[in-house]
Image (spheres, rainbow, N blue to C red):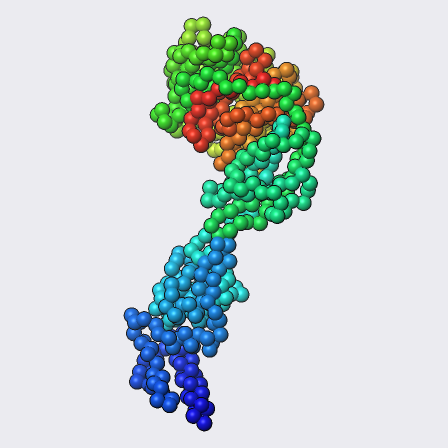
Length: 530
């Protein structure tokens, strides 16, 4: 009988505390109802040591109430995969410090009414109103949180692109600085995250020591402290030896590191004019000449005014630069450099101020296509005749673009890649061919890899598109375009990935000069033999 009485009084005690808990969560004043209440069973004092002063510590009684009301066991306190929720009623009412359970700045605490609160006491007393837990989650179930403090599992990476060379494949994706990446691969399709893994990869990643005439398939996942994302869609590429003996060699460095320069090759001498390097004060007027035969550099007279990211072309052994930017605005200025006298002369200005266009010389005329104005990328095409010192507006391109490149083959200008933030895909792979004989544009086969701020040069009737950027990634990609067949072939990657570089041809070899990457402005010179 005594045992039944004890059970009876314990049950009454729990019910009273439960009713008290309900009122607490409703924000009611229960101090009068609980204060002074006591129970004893067979000499055992069951007086609840519950203090209703919001500044006092929470006691054991609410721990029992929590169990009665089904809050359940303690939830995950913030797991690495971002799947956690509140620490749970048991942990909370026991006085531990729970993790965040709402997608807000921590700390936020969970209470029995499945709400989150900004302070420990507010959670207990149920005010202010709190924020609602994620749908389908309750206090203590360990789900629906934000990973215990704001970090969530990364999003699925966008589909990667690939560039294949001799025995190697470069995988490129749009990366996030707050995540690292895993690459999973196999020699057949259907790659999963149980496949061979490359950890800690950064974009672009070059997978080396591969076997030619073999297909390789890849998926990419993002990783942070909260866990690993779902895998990207799969990309497969068949590796073949397409180099034809192509090689890269490092040459004497340019005296002044910079990017966005103009370049012209006159009598096998490369003249590099202007550019930018924030470590050297910003926009530069520096002119330096490279003799690729002796592999030496010489300083020349500085240009009278700065021009960064201009159009450039050589007509009758004179280097012409047009447009660009001089600090804060795009400009229309045209200048001519005569290496014989080592002097600059100002010429007639372009009609439209712009920077970072494509350019090329056809039959003694300098064509300048696209670029960026103060209003964004443009389709404008203008032609400069040095003999008449005049500009003529021509038929515009179909796609506005900036940070693009241009090369001339068989009397036609090819404008390749670039950037347009207003396009569905801001980084462009598209190619347009301009025929000055008919003043018309024709769309050609796109590059395999979209990019901007690249350079291009022509050897033996083929265009080599080199380097550039895609998102935050500096590229070492080299792709060869054959206008005769309208086809692209991936070639051996450049040793140094870089953006806003320039290039020219001497003795059948391409010399890639300057640019920048995560190391800053570059004075690197690399020679490519196709």
